[in-house]
Structure formats: structure tokens, C-alpha cells
Image 1 (cartoon, rainbow, N blue to C red):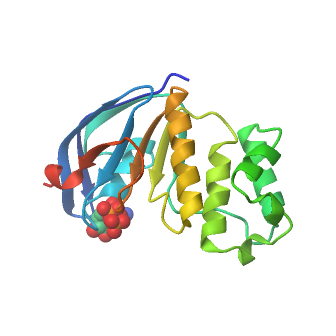
Image 2 (cartoon, rainbow, N blue to C red):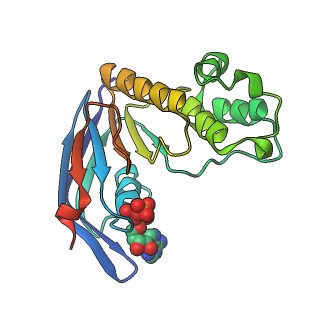
Length: 192
Ligand SMILES: Nc1ncnc2c1ncn2[C@@H]1O[C@H](COP(=O)(O)OP(=O)(O)OP(=O)(O)O)[C@@H](O)[C@H]1O
């Protein structure tokens, strides 16, 4: 996996407000970056810009590799069972076998449960399982540890370490310290 994410002189405007400016990133295979900063500083906005879902007010982004985005929107069809909802994603992702990722996340026993009945942490684990459906070099994770119990947090940290060990890169937003050897970017340093 050859991951690359290059952001140059990024500025972010939300509504009428310039949130941050002159932000640069140069990440490659194995790089792991935690984005921190107070509520409302623009962390989620930065991830959406890096993902290509929002346009920067200024600056450029170059991406080498497909993006795996986890942004708190579960997008699990509430009319389906978890197994069916994940099978739908698997078809989109070209993943032939969902059993292994589901077992890794401990959600294989929940396949027959309607997604509407799942707990917050169970839904979160389903979203993480989807990250494993397809090798996507660039992981962008917004508060990925939120709502997870302690063993699931440990597992997620392992998955991120494996991803980076395999040549992927990961940018994650988290208020809490993560048990990962991540560099830190404090968005307050770029506040406009
Ligand atoms: N589409 C939008 N239009 C206008 N303003 C927006 C939009 N989306 C976000 N904002 C504003 O931009 C600011 C930054 O929001 P963002 O969600 O990026 O912050 P954050 O650092 O991730 O916050 P938190 O720690 O609370 O999750 C907030 O003031 C928010 O209200």
C-alpha cells in the first residue's frame, strides 16, 4: 500500500468564519497523526477537506490512494439486519467475505439483529469492520474511539497500527489521548 497525503497552505471557511489557515501536511506510508483542538476549532471540517468532501477556502490537497472515512455518520440502513447492511457495503467495496472483519470486530454474532436495535458501540464497530472490507491507503477517522468500550478501543488501536504497518497512513481526530505512537497536530496553532 502506497499512501500519500499532501496538504499545502490550507485555509477553512465555514459560513462567514475563517477557522484556520496556513495548515500544511505531508504524510506518507506508515504516518499516523492525531488532530486535536477545542470544540468548534474545525477538526471535523479539516477531515472533510482532506477527504475531498468539502472544498478548502485556500490551498491544495494531493491524495495518493483511496480514502477510508469514518466520520460519525453510520449510514447503516435501519430497515436491514446488520448482516444485510454490511453485505450491501461489501458489494460496493468489492469485498467477497465479510465474515473475517465481522469476527475481528466481534459483531459476527449480531448479524441477524436489525441495525436500529444496535448500541452505539456496536454500530461504531460495524463502521470499523467496513474499513477492513477493502484496502484503502488513507484512513481519516473522526473520533473513532468515542462510544467504544475499553477492549474495542484497544482493538481499534491495533487495527490502526496494522494499517500503518502495512504502508497506510491515518489521520484521526480525538479528544482523548490514544494509545498509539501518533504525532500530534493542534489545530489551535493554525486558528485564524
Ligand atoms: N456547513 C457548515 N456551515 C457553516 N458552519 C459550519 C458548517 N459545518 C460546521 N460549521 C461550523 O464550523 C465550526 C467548526 O466545526 P467542526 O465540526 O469542524 O469543529 P470540531 O473542531 O470538529 O468540533 P468538535 O470538537 O465539537 O467536534 C463550528 O463552529 C461549526 O458550527
